[in-house]
Image 1 (spheres, rainbow, N blue to C red):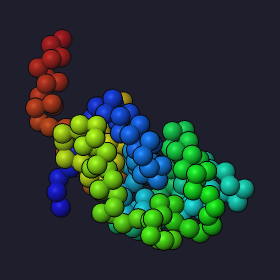
Image 2 (image 1 turned 90 degrees about the vertical axis):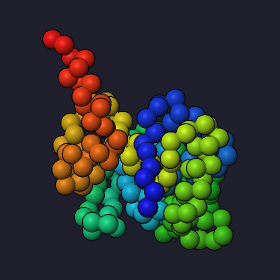
Image 3 (image 1 turned 180 degrees about the horizontal axis):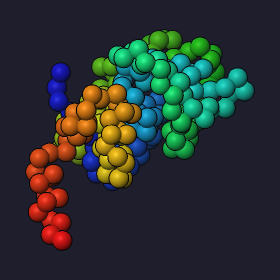
Length: 189
């Protein structure tokens, strides 16, 4: 598996959102939900409409899943930007059944595959001139990186990602030894 990076620049995230929203609402929703949930792409692609909408067709306040990799139950709130992307995507996609995959393939009533998601993300990243390696795991890494940069405790992020240690999480989001050394060199109290 190729090593990929988080999208560190918020302007690049906004450019990706704008590009995807203008070209394909499914891919836009996948991107926005991915960077706002920290889910693995395998869990994103397994979501059904009933996982995000109630019986009245309104977006739920929380998503509950069983993670494919760990088998653990996970419940998390849906951010306002993710909520809006789901609403916009499903409004254009209608009609659908609640049991349908959320991210449906153009070829039928099956979920898109990881390679389709990868191609969509890479195409958008190239269009907005992102130079770093981008992949489906970029969504999860971007979530974690920006949570860390906002000042969230690394052990909380570790728990959200189900990592074994804070050092694993720091390495995962691309915090390097040089960046850690800069703390010592720039603090100068």
